[in-house]
Image (cartoon, rainbow, N blue to C red; front, side, top):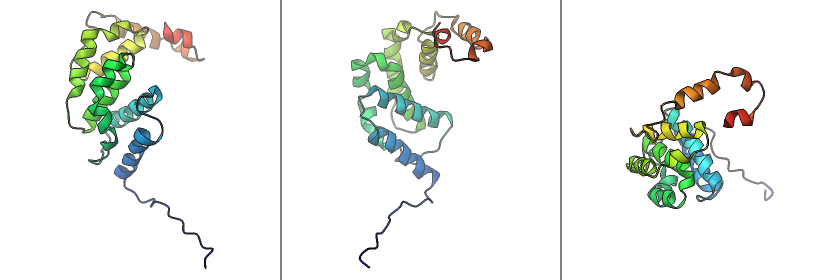
Length: 170
């Protein structure tokens, strides 16, 4: 029967850890390139979801990000405008089990450089604060009204009835 085609489909019985490892590898290596801002965004979001949900990963699951992690300081020095993505990825990799402590060093550098002070929106400043406070650093110690301004925005539920980008940026 020379017309028979064998279908080699991966088993659906993969463990959750194996599925997560495959997902991480797909985002890290098969969708975009590492110096692409969309690569940074996608990987930062994926890793943050895994970190925030206390995902259990196999030991090798983070291996596709080892090269990124090894070059984190260099990338931050060259692309400081993407510091929130870079910090997020670095901190999440460490908190998910990657060996190293670059996250704290990078947080100190970002705070010294005042990168959070240059943000245009309170939402971006709050994200910077949340990231760096994971390593005990407040990049905006003098901005005591940030949380109350954000809650003032959040508490106006009527502005969420229809998408309103201008309201979100104020």
